[in-house]
Length: 356
Image 1 (cartoon, rainbow, N blue to C red):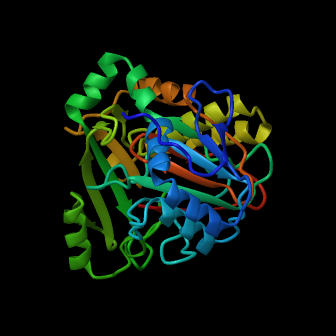
Image 2: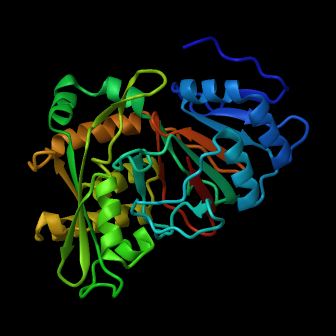
Image 3: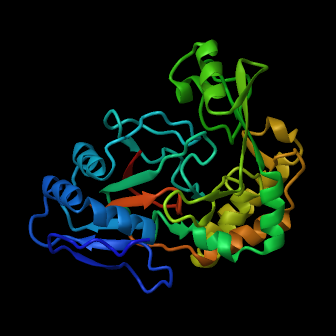
């Protein structure tokens, strides 16, 4: 890569913490703190911003006055104006503007494992943006990051070889507009909510454009089967990136995530959630895997060895960077290099998201 571009105006820049991955790089306000001024700064310094995102993987704009969704959208557009509004992921989200959404409406106790946004669609987002509109209580509700380039470089060659040779097969099951015939604790939303239509022909066409195989199931449900590689090449740096949803969609993930959260924050609540997740995981094993809300195998349909997934999770957590949100923070992420997730929380919290 070329040498970093020179900044035209004097905002402070520094790594957020002493973590060896130096992630994210902070841009702290000096002078005009308005969202309009920040957006203008990002445009004037577009070369530096692009270079810093590719090098560091994420930028945290701090101490600026970004107070609402429209202001957040203005800043995001200054970095990448090609914002999208089609969301084909699994988390329930509420729209705040035409292109800004709540990051997730999943229950506050539910952890979201590390993943690159929509890695399973035909063209995943290049950039992902978050904004803290309501700051969570200290010691909870963070959006951890991990450099998936470093995860790929650290994983044993034998594990990489198995994933790379076979790829991934992902199965997702959605209830229909009527809500389905049976209660399912893991089911996240309906297919008409995800696609914004009840027209099955339109749903099938959109699935095929993304490389999904749609299967209509009993009770007006929809099963989506898709395939994705485990490793991608970063389009700018040429680095190999662990860029997939293998741990996110595997039924062992919840218990494995809660176990690590309990080690990070050993509270009675986290211990109880870990043990409950173990019970629920055992219940899931009684069902046909392809009927679970989310499931994944190797691309040829063979199960993924739990030991391999544990190796991946350990590598991800070794590179996990956690920081406390401050109201008005804007986080820009290179979605081809850096993952994100969510730790459980209590009390108010609102993080907005958009992507390009």
